[in-house]
Length: 171
Image (cartoon, rainbow, N blue to C red; front, side):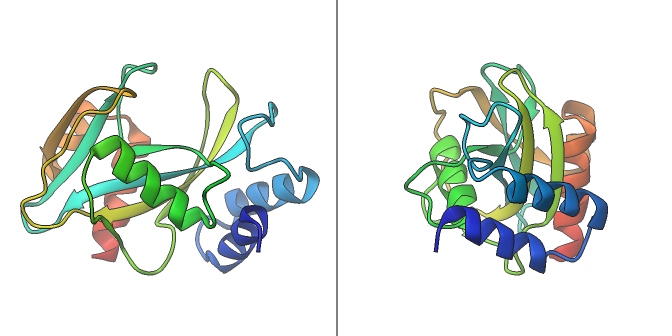
């Protein structure tokens, strides 16, 4: 199965945000290249909010290009067999933490936002860090930092706050 086909199945199974979900499905129906950065009108991306529920913390990256505290995430790549695999790869690459585990149940949220390259139709997952995990800054990040759940609204934009709320509701 192609990544495009997996994305369609994942989105059809996602029961929240019906209107936005349909925007994603319509995009994929119209654009066979809609998974890839080369699709200049917009493309699906995958992200993972890295959390440590035992400590009530979230790991955010200070994005090098956007200069904002965000969850880990980015463009899908040919090595990604599924959206979940793309989110897990991005989470691992950008956090430096091995053995992340995605929360069961599929995506936590969808978020459509304009970036310098195009519209990102982000499929957002949550990933649990193993006990004692040590983060390592990647080349895409200026900084990595653990924030308590209560601190996130003070440093991140509303999309991250909504992702954290949806993640906490699923825990």
